[in-house]
Image 1 (cartoon, rainbow, N blue to C red):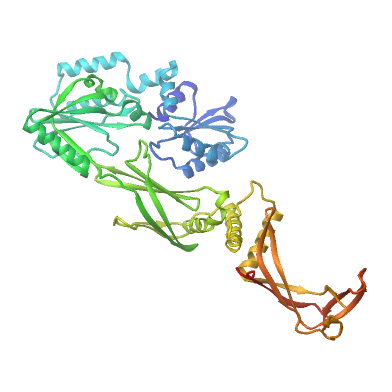
Image 2 (image 1 turned 180 degrees about the vertical axis):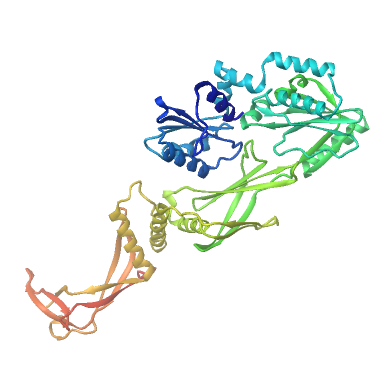
Length: 537
């Protein structure tokens, strides 16, 4: 069921326009001077192209200045897709209301209102028309040439197309001695009947995931208690255990517990015939190594992928997480097309308790946004590598900032030998202090512009007797305050340049003199503070 049907009927009823520019249908305002609302139909039955949806929305707003746009999807959105709809579309234009009708909504509008029933009758025919077709088919009618045959097939096709909002039922007719036509993509069930020299096959294709959840084929195999039944049972068990295909022509029958509406009369009945079992090999956990080699970096990460629920749209799914980065691989096989499909997805979730272990994951994620290649290798079981060409995409700026922050945390954690973690709120001052500390650790110290310093000297201090003061070293333990915690980093050693005493002050202690020391040259000096581990570290 697509919105195209609703659009055509509405156009006749309220004189709606059928435009371009990001909408399929527009509702004009009074005097036809403006448009009140638009509808955009998207025929996505599995994945939704959000970039194309955003492009349609932007063009509709720019071209027609509409304040309300409704997307019409030929499927019911998953929870994840609903969130992505809000993220990509609902909030994209603050002054424009953006919502959607899904498959269930469209079906309900066709059946629950007189307007919808008008649409259904227009495109699917009324009941009297269907009954006339059925009577014509039963009586045979005139069938003298190719045109008569085509007319008969058109009548049947019209009936099949309008009979079920959940499934479509493409049919094919061929002679039994000729090779049957290949089934279209997305087929979940095929029913083939042979009468004399003619073979008729009806394929079943779900229009949405809801169709399979409510009416997906479900039944049981029954094996006869003879040699043919035992051979059939062994063939099925072997296919299920090892993967592969089994064609069984004797010793087996089926009882259906649930079927698509077109075949409802077969539910509960035992049907004899040939059975073809196609079983995928069981997917095992996967130790994977992923290499991203692009213009934004060359990074390698290992993932322990475990089998997860694949849902209704995929045959299998594996997922694993390293450093907050989750890799998900989904796969399915289109039997009638003799081809497979793999989908590789990435997601990142910040783990504040192990922040130091995640910079590498973000560096890897950044590399995935560049132009180059990605290769997924199996480290244990010898699966063939998966190679994918990568095209450049924008790397979010907030992830770049997060990567810098996490790299600083990792550097300080490694030096301190303990996990620091991240607080819920980080101020810009906290972030700046952290990056300065991390730079000191990473560089083994820091350069300092020295102008003067104060020093307490006792009565016997050599400083009071030297002029200039040479070969002086300053050493002290260095602690850093990171997110409110004091982290010991080591000790700093500074070799001072020649100094002169530029000021003396007597302190309250009679044997202590406060000296102000400055470079002997009379100008500020550049000195190096060298960071070293504490004794015993």
